[in-house]
Image 1 (tube, rainbow, N blue to C red):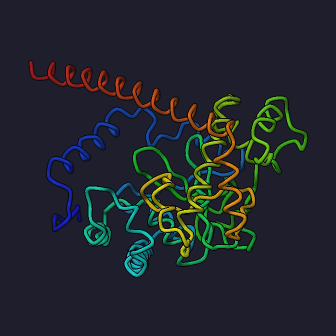
Image 2: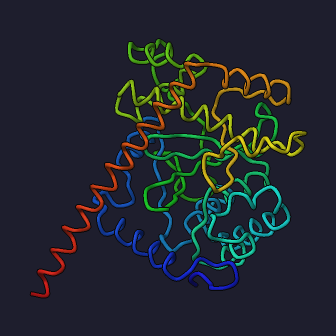
Length: 333
């Protein structure tokens, strides 16, 4: 079932543009679901992906496979997640896209075949009090299902590929059916205990990062030290912003206007590193980061690089689209 038109829905032009972009991405992709880099990272950890049907239910199928050992409970998970989000509208409505209303988003999300995202992942984590570890090309992060990051909880392992596709993560040596039985390994455990030259360089630049985080990012970025450092800095700021957004009883209502969320899908993203849970610790951490000139410089550098990448990607996409259009026209000549 497709998206349902109703009050608060995006206009037809917006919907058509989104469909067009999705089709272009699928048409132009040369590596399936975008597995380059992701496969390398998972193999280093002894993992592989169990692909889910690309029918719009892949996120809920992946959660079902991890939680129940089968993807058949995806419809049940979709409905319970939607019910949880409706019951906690105040906490999640700010993460809905600007051209949608919360009610329209939820009415739409209840339909089979509608793509879910980070907001739905975060809701499932909170509802079932589980952590969800997301693996994607060049990045690994955790959606925390509880306020205490040190509390032991079940961890679900989900892979996010390109083009809005999710799959379940399994051990390379099985089982491929039933409970995943994944042992939460880190690159630190699967590699030498002594850091390499590249790892030392990254750790010196990012003293708050653990050795396992450093190794994960170096592998994800093909041992590019600069890229790994920027990824770790970016994940640190995402973690910091999400902690502030997720606090339910902040006395200063203006805080949310100052802090920007990493995405509009409502995920509570945290790293493997420990995060203070007290408000005082959070305030000190926030204050320290705002004062640090080094951190501000790195943030500016990351933003500039992201803007350059976005411009370059836009030009490449435009050129590729023109090429495809030209080739398609040749078919009709």
